[in-house]
Length: 68
Image 1 (cartoon, rainbow, N blue to C red):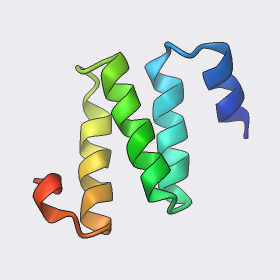
Image 2: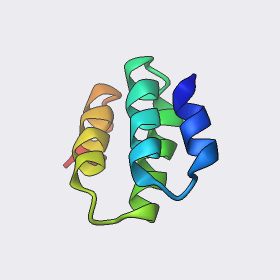
Image 3: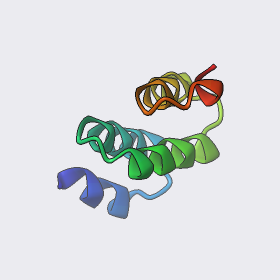
């Protein structure tokens, strides 16, 4: 997975971690995707897209309270 290589080369780049989170989410690897989204937000709390996608993930796995 080329995304993992990008993360390894630039570990402080939120966009790489976000793309990894999206890929994991698409593969229904929900726990890993959640961790990746959360990591993006530790790198850049102002990055809006991961909040939105994390909410979608929570809805998909029926964790509705966290999705709100």
